[in-house]
Amino acid sequence: MITAALYARVSSRNQAEAGTITSQIAALDAYAEAHDMHIAPEHRFVDDGVSGRFLARRGLDGLRDAAMTKAFEVVLCLSPDRLAREMGAQHVVLYELQRYGVAIHFLNQPTFSDSREARFWQQMQGLLAEWERNLIQDRMRRGRRFRLQQGLSVPVQAPYGYHYQKAQGQQRSQWLVIEQEAQVVRKIFSWYAEEGRPLNAIARSLNEEQIPSPAGKQWGRSTLHHLLQQPAYKGVAYYGRTRADYSVVGQPRKQGRGRLLTPRSQMRPADEWIRISVPSLVSEALWQAAQERRTMQARFSRRNSQRQYLFRGLLVCHVCGYTLQGRTSSNGRVTYHCMRGGKNRPPDVSEHHCIVEESTLQSLLWQDLSALLRQPERVQRAWEALFPVTAPEQRTQRERRRKQLQQRRQRLLTAYEAEIYSLEELQKALNPVMAELQEIERQETDAALPTETPSLEQFQHGIQLALETSDFETRQEVIRLLIERILVTDDAFIPEYVVPLSSSCRLDPMFRKT
Image 1: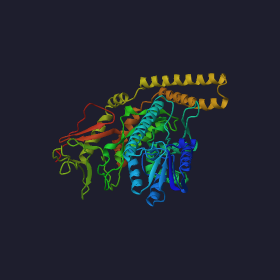
Image 2: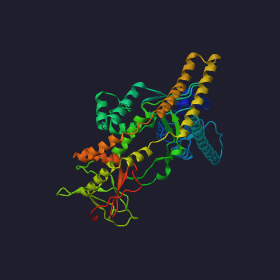
Image 3: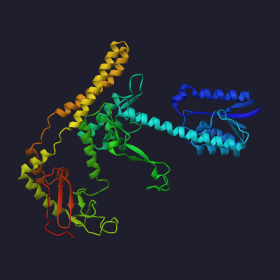
Image 4: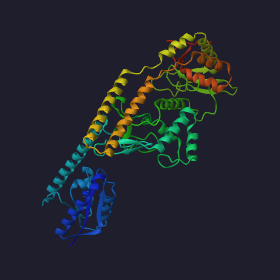
């Protein structure tokens, strides 16, 4: 009697649940019995719900290890694509089995007396299996994108605060809000954007309350940073924002040794993203406030600086475009230097020297801000010009989506009246429709609310208070709120205000910078 082993595999979990792996094993057992072969229990190697693209599979590894010890004479497999989907992977396994003197029989492949014909047929089947896999992947990708674009499904990966519910019958897939986690998300946004707590303090509070993180572990800065930039919490999820960049494979690593073995994620253009409406957990205003604070912290982070610099992160060299760095001399004199003007300059930038004294710039800037108080109409006109108006296309999109949802709601009610749906089925299908309609109504209500114009008197009082105070934090906060950056040229400082007060603003220092 011939000693044999069998190998069976299915790719997806759905195939595993459908029992197709059982039919493979039954066919292999029948073939072994008909050809007087004995398969020991420890020589039945199965990969249930595992992709055949790569060789790293538990069942296949066990088969290869046992073949190395020549524990059996023959391996039974349904077809070459069950062994591996990639032609190169097939050749690796077949070469190993041949080297160890182990034959392989494919049930769905004819047997040739000439081994060259058999190898040719195996190669053809390998190519067909590889082509079929790529075709299946492309069809699934296009079908998934189409359903997402039509609003018929949502991405499978739901962020913290949501639970993915797959499609059932007429009910499309959706994200259901996990209220306990949603309360944690609202608490984090409120602490961060409204109370101004740092991320370390938020993480410490959550850990003290013994609230598990999304990974079920302790909360940390990186987890909170990722959560705060999640757009789904304001009611909008995106699909297809990134793509795999295979051009970096084989390139040296930027950090550490060796070369990159896998592709890296690369952002797609924004117009290629697929926008999906999902239930919101926080208001758009609160989410936007959190993003503004994140941007400010990223720009003005102290990092490991041990000294305070009033214009840190604001001064920009007009030659190379890099931010000037602050320095403090032994006598307490504060200056800002361009570190990219000498030997560290980019190859396309000429050698230059850019040095600014803080006391001189502060005096000139304070004089310019004082002049603004004497011309409040300039600030008023500039501020009013910045107020955004709700885009007509946004209102059109909301109205179109509302009509679609109302039509879907009417069809569901008609189906219920015709006794096609039961009351329970109607509620399951109607809940996401009503939730999205309520979200559209909330957005229209927010857009219709009158925007309060900031009080000019409050603005004047705030600047006057900052000019008179000696508190460093207050002066720095006012400067950062009013000024986007200050361009440093050879003979002038050019501040770019957040509110465009004029087309050009030039502050001429009383000395020429060296």
